[in-house]
Image (tube, rainbow, N blue to C red; front, side, top):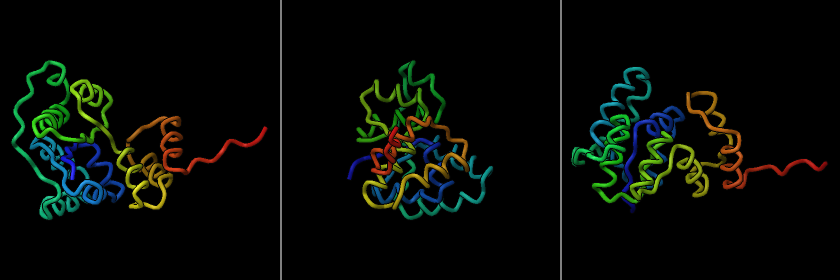
Length: 172
């Protein structure tokens, strides 16, 4: 299985949708740096109903908290928030095949350093394509209505096309 590293926001959004275990289903194991884990625990205090999902994932051994990443020294990476910075550093350190990160600037920096990236929408799309969820559209609707996650109509339409859920335009 591929080595996968995650940043904080995809963990929270997937937990909010009760879809955190998709990470286990898709990737077997997901690594998070200690800073991401700290952010996750702090966020769990704000949304305590999500805390059991995270602790269960760590106890089950598929969400792995790693303190192994060396500190990033590149100014471009250091300018990011601590979770993003450490997620990129850990992904580079582990020679990760995939980094799950939502923040646009973090994604850009990660790609400049040769990392393959996806985000919450990519995880949901991958799960749909592999049959782990039956439809992408309801997940996107919940993501839009129940979280602070924002995405364009164009991105939604693109994801739905990739999931074979798009509707053709009406005839003129």
